[in-house]
Image: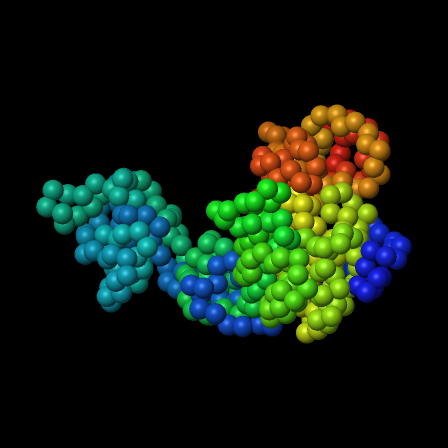
Length: 416
C-alpha cells in the first residue's frame, strides 16, 4: 500500500494490520555493506563472515594447576618420591625433558615439559626440606590437571558463526584465538529529527504552551541500544523551508527517524515535504495503539524513513517494533519482526472499547520455575512518558475488547 503524500489526510485510507506492516517493511530490507574493523572496535558490531581457528588452542599441553609436572607412570600409587629438576612458569618454553623419577615445578598455564603427562597439585605434594625432592601424596593418572593441545578447539574449527553480535565475551574469545581484524556489517547511521513549534530543547526558555522535547533524547538512546550510530539533528519548526532543509540533511544517513508532523493537522507537513525530496511512502497508518499515524518509506537512495507519531510513548513503541527491525536487518540479523516472548498476565485487565491491538508498557519478570510474567504499568496514554519509567517490556494485547484474566498467556517484547 503506497500513501500519496499530496493527498495526505484528505483521502480515506486503509490502516495496515500489524503483520501487514511488518511484512511491508521486511520486503524493503537487506543487509548493509561489509567492512573490516580492528578487533578493539568490534564490540556491538555484527559478524558478516564466520571466524575459524587458525591453529589449535591451547597450542600446547597446558598445566591447569600450580604444582608439579610428572610422569603418571611414576605416580601410580601415593607416596612416589621424585627429584625436582627445576621450575617452569607460564610463558616459558625452555627445552626441558622429564626422565623417569623426575618432576618439574610448574605454574598454571605453563607448557608441560617433554615426557610429562600429568600435573600433581601443590596441595597434594610434600617438598623435602632442602627443596631437592617431592613426595606425591596421591596417585596420579595420565592427563590429570592437564588441558591437552587443541582441547578447546582444533585448527580450522568454527569459532563464531555469522551473523552474531560481538560482545565482551566473544571479543575475548577472538582475541585469545589471535584474531586482529573482523569482517562486520557496516554500522547504520540514524538521523533523528523532532518537529513542532511546541517543542523546545532541554534547558531552553519555555513559553506558555510549549513543552520540552523528550523524543530526541529518547530516540537517541534507543538507536544506541539498537546498535546503530545516532545522528541527532535537533528540533525543526513547522516551516516548509526549514523542514525541507533538515529532511534533505537527514537523507545523508542510512535511516531517518522523524518524530511528529505525521498526522492530519494543519502543521503536519512532514509527509508532503518528504515526498518532494523523493521519499516513497510504503504505508501510512497501522491499526494499533499507540502509534496509529506511523509511516514508513524509502528515500531516493534507499534510505529507511520512519515517520513516528509525536507523542512520546507512540514514538517509543513505533521505534521499538518497526525501526528496530530495519536497523537489525541492516546489521545482518534475520529480517523479522521483533522477538516476542510468551508470558503470563499478572492481573486482570478489563475490556476496552477500542479494538486496535495495543502495546502496553509492562514489567516483565521470570519466576523461580522459569515462567515469564507480565504486569501492565499504570500509564495515561501515548502522551505520558512516565508510564514507561518502570517498564522493561511491551505487552501486546491483540484484542483489547475481551477480558485478559490473570494467568492468561500474552505476547511481550523486551525493551531493556
